Length: 138
Image (cartoon, rainbow, N blue to C red; front, side, top):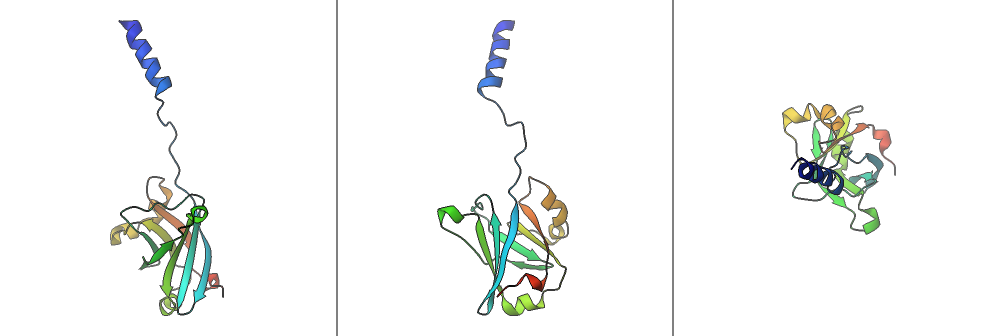
């Protein structure tokens, strides 16, 4: 009986291995910020496709949130995401404010702790640096 238990245990370890290493969330970076008419397109890139499910991605700059976005449908560019910010709103954003991306809306309390949330591989939140109007290219 002991041999049977040992054999079953060894088979389960070698035939059905579990993931021993935590999966890291993909890195997300700002790739472009450009004006198109009265809108600013805020482009993000990831080495892996952005997950699209029942939630939406939300871009936070300071205490403002932006959720109107578009993901590329091209197979080789599914890691591209654009947010659309009205120019008059962009011009009112303050220098040095933190920029975050989240998958889904976060509450006001959660928004205050997005820096910590962005460090957790289990959270779908990313810190993207500090806002500057110098990011805008023509």
